[in-house]
Length: 297
Image 1 (cartoon, rainbow, N blue to C red):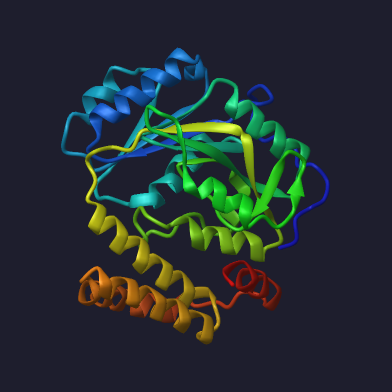
Image 2: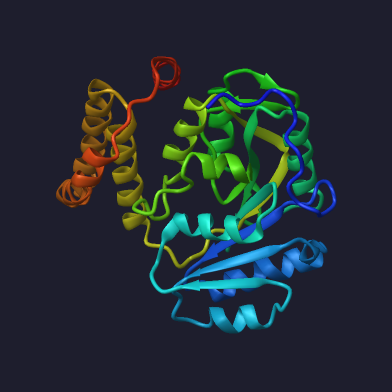
């Protein structure tokens, strides 16, 4: 698909600059309550907002019951990042702001992101400037997006990736590339989406004036998260890249896993997806692969 160079018609009847909001959550009732309170205080409760509950077993349903302006969808098993696809379909707006249960935008941040998308119809995703914790540390991914920039788009930087939980996307465009893969869970699930968007001719933009705060939940298993991210990097490579590129990435990830004493676990995780990798393998165009190689060099 080649993006239409002309602006797309507005699909939502809501005012310009107002995206739908989709939040995914699982067993983080406290964090979710904080995020929803911040959105309410910023009067973002006026936006169509959907929370997709990935089969929580804590007090998440009570939190959602206390925020009647939120539409909630509970799924019976953890869909990970793919739960965003359900939320995006439900809000049915031209633009969707994806947040996690521990992220929230600064006032007017979503308006800035949508304005950028409207001004640049070839842009599919606007990625946020992410500030972490109470001391507002800049997430290292922001520096990486500037250093690996593919040029400027207005006030933004063209990039090859984004953080899903701090982004605003064109709903139809995300749907066209299949959304977030149901097998990837949470952790590096954005990469496959980013590559498919780039391959379809779209641009991804990091916009420093679109600021999102991230207060990471203490309810994390860092080792499992690293394992999942590594597995997903390997899966993405074998699903879209050349054999040589995929092999190089697999070797690099295996070396890191060996140093962390998790090589066997990584091997098992990768091999469980082997039928999927064979079934869903589709090479990127040479131009896209060349661009990615240049960024990875």
